Amino acid sequence: MSREFDFYDRTSLKSYNLNESMRYQLDMLDRLDVFTRKHCENVASLTCRLCEYLHCKKGFTAYCTICAYLHDIGKLYIPPEILQKPGRLTDEEYEIIKTHTTIGYQMCMEDLKLRPYAAGPLYHHEALNGLGYPNGLTKKDIPYEGQIIRVADEYDAIVSKRQYKSHIGISDTLKILIENSQPPKKTDAEYNNPNFKDKRYGKNNPAIVRTLFKVVIDDIIYEISYTQDYVEELKDELKRFEQIKKYGDKMNKAKKEKDKNYYLEGMKTLMKNNETPENYMEIYEEYKHAYETRKAIIENLYKEIKIIKKLKV
Image (cartoon, rainbow, N blue to C red; front, side):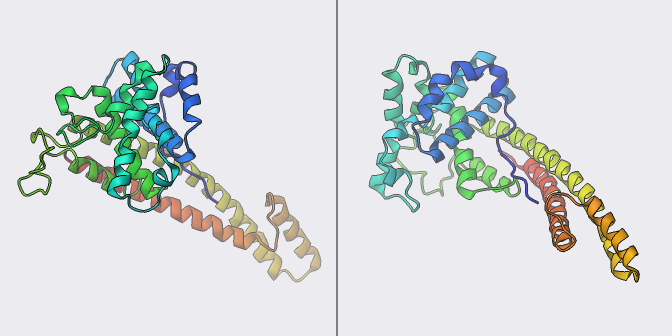
């Protein structure tokens, strides 16, 4: 009675003929651990769609998408016990993690096929206000691709960490990105941080975060459509089970064996797969539960769209 929803099922990657041009780059990703590889794929998908909503040129979109695929390639050389540590990193471990940006950059620069996309690994953790790494650059020195990938990377990192199965509650993730897009207040702990080089900005580009809202709403509408299709399938199945139940009720009330057999055969004619006269009520209840659950999901998704539309960056 379940159907898995893929957050990143809607993608425009194929329209850019990236399969051919990215074969070598994707081979590099195969060397990463499963979690990091999936994250790179998700960030590339988000980056591609952000570029489209930002009305970037097709060539830049393709370039930026490949940069996004490779943004975490430097994690190949981060010790697994640090990279996959379930708990909070120590300061020393965090410094090691941060080196994946410069390691990835070096990997790209040393490989002629990867060199054009070195910006992905190098800039995706830089912040507009100078609080990013590895070089603490500010907005004027951070390439646009780096600013886009940063937003896609931060969004997917939070989504993955929280293990969302649906877009319900996803507005809380967007609120974190909004917070990271706002200039500091004098009361903020970071305000007097010596690395805070440009206090006109937050860490994220507000225009890109605002564009992410459109991507997310588009995905929620797709999830609603996807879920609604499943609800319609479930509705048809429930009608079938209701008919089976009618036959079952009549069979139980019948006095004559001939009538009992007649209704039993009617039940069997409507049954599928592993359904039997003995277990159909249990399966029927599972379908009813799945139906009500999906209807509630759709209702909550519409509420989520309303919340996101009211968000301000």
